[in-house]
Image 1 (tube, helix red, strand yellow):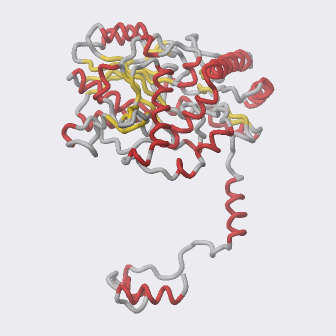
Image 2: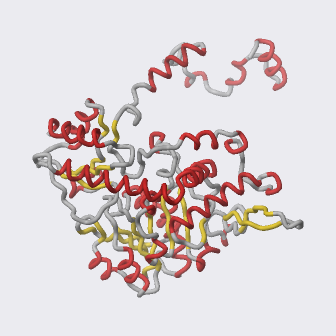
Image 3: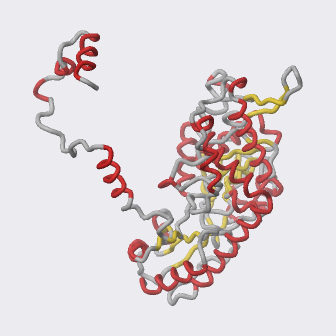
Length: 443
């Protein structure tokens, strides 16, 4: 901005100096002196400075990451960035005008179709903010559909997702009851005792937070016997090899699409998915992109079933979700398109095989044990020797170029000294072996 620009702007608003803009602030509370900030930098100096700051981060290109717990280091095909970087996608706003938004609408429609294929459900929406809010919205839908106020949530569900569910439930007047775990999976005996005619739904995660695979068919039988719903949160990568939750009795299937070609980006943003059986289609939060034909019989796409408060009366809205993660949903769509059915099977098998090799290798380290025997996908729990600090071990591993696992003691006091290990298709046998050797030297 030039001095002339500044004077013209001040004249337009009727003041003579910048100081006049602050005359209403009492003199005694005004800041005197200079703010403790660095002097202005030119473009080259600023780029160099920011590059130095960025280099301090332990990124997954230079470090072998065994950290999962909801955000995973998966391979991202290069084509994804080429597609989502196209201006017609990354500048697109909510497609309220279908006649000029066909490309965006079709991309979302493809996302919905892929999610239905993966989950075995009839209908999927145009994405959610993330997996945690999708799970909470599923609890809300369950209450509205059953006219009941109790939600049973397994403690094997991601701790942060459980907190989000509780936050939603407080505003909706719902009662959240947690069910304990046994051997890394939901305690079915306790669940059977907790289910009643007041239970709207059971919320479970499979593979769960500990990486273990839940007995969804048995859980579904328990809740359906009392006419409640089964809500399943799942890792979409696992569905390349595991049976779709929809085929095992799930009424609602949700999850986070981050494993499907979305960068970890220091923990977000991500993209949630939400799929339901035909019976609950009209209660689904957000909106759906539908396929139709115009007057000339040409295929077209439109937003439909928009049961959110921006489109209908607030008291009749199913949710106050304001938008969808269209660009990140596009990442997932491109990923699934590139991988195809066979590719999804292969990447799922790689996750399974490599995690099981890692479990055997790490479990052979003196003093280390695997406390759970339940079947697992690409994450498992490892117990360190008694009295060993997970934080200290991770700090030592970091110095060796390894991002260690999640400290389970942060969320589960009974699992102090336990580490959650994630192994994706990006980890090599050499990296796993190096992890085992480094771990042996850290404990």
